[in-house]
Amino acid sequence: MTAVATWPGRAESWLDERGKGAWIAAMVLGFIVFWPIGLAILAYMIWGKGMFGKSCAARSRATAYGNFRSSGNSAFDSYKSETLKRLEDEQEAFASFLERLRAAKDKTEFDAFMDERARKRAEDQRQATSGE
View 1 (cartoon, rainbow, N blue to C red):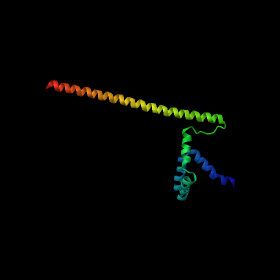
View 2: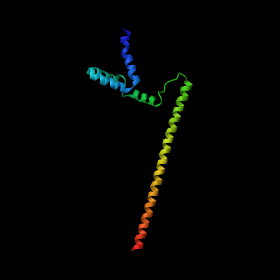
View 3: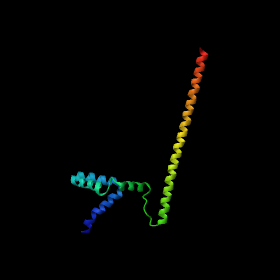
View 4: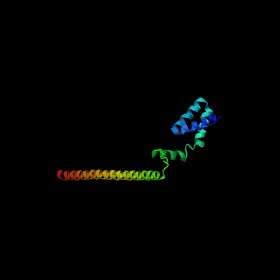
């Protein structure tokens, strides 16, 4: 009796480990096999799992930071979170630096274009006045 009662929990855990794509595949297969099964999985995904709510956003952030799980050692976890925060800040600062660098390069190129254009216009005016 316990094996029958726990198989939905094991199936849910198995699908959770594989992510949102596995849930969607299970739903599609459920629709193919017998449409009420697919409908039940869809309803569970929307209302039971909070598939489109904050839990998925938190899960994707956790995945982006290497599945931040507690190691059981609070000092190490604190060090890890501080290091990740510092690296995130450095990444933002570097992105800002690159943006300023690109803007400076664009300005330099634009100024060079405008100077060349002004020189060409002045030269054309000199030729027009000397040729008349």
